[in-house]
Image (cartoon, rainbow, N blue to C red):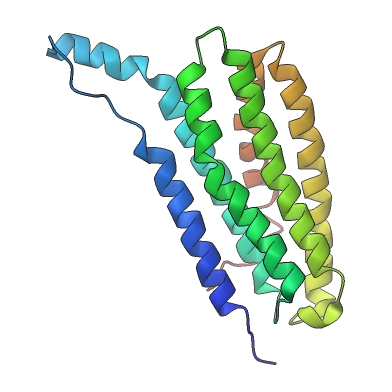
Length: 206
C-alpha cells in the first residue's frame, strides 16, 4: 500500500527545524560601553543559564522529533483527527523557545522557581500532546503500514509517555521548592530516555 503521509511529515519536520532555530536566536551579548577582553569573558560566563537552557531544550526537541519520526514510519495514512493531533504537537513544540528563554533569563533571580516550574510543566505538556497523537492513531489499524509491527511499537511509546508526563508533573512540583534540583532532573530525563530507547529503536531510515 502506498504511503500517503509524506507531506504531513515534511511539514512537521519544517516546524521542528524552526523551533530548534528559535531556541538559539536569542542567545548573545549586545554591544556595551567599556567592553574589553576581561569583562567580555565575564559576561560570556555570566550567560551560562542561557547556554544550559538552550542545550537542554535542543536535546529535548531532538528526542521528540525522533519519536515523532518513529510514529510516522508506522503510518500509511492520516485522517482529520490525526492531522489535528499532530498540529497540536507542532503548536507546543513551536512555542518551546518561550519557556526556554524564560528559564534562561530568570535563573539566579527571585523568580527562578516560577521560571523552572513553567519550563518543566511545558515540557510535560509536549509529552502529553505526543500521547494524544498516539491515541488518535491507535483507534484504527488501517492507518498502519504493518499493524502487527506498528501497534506494539506505539503501545510501548505510550507507556513511556505516561511515565514522562507523571515524571514532569512531579518535577514541576519540586521546582517550587528546589528549582536547581528540578532543572537538573530535566537534564537527566532526556539523558535517560536517550539511553533507554536506544536498544529498542529501529534503524533510523528516511
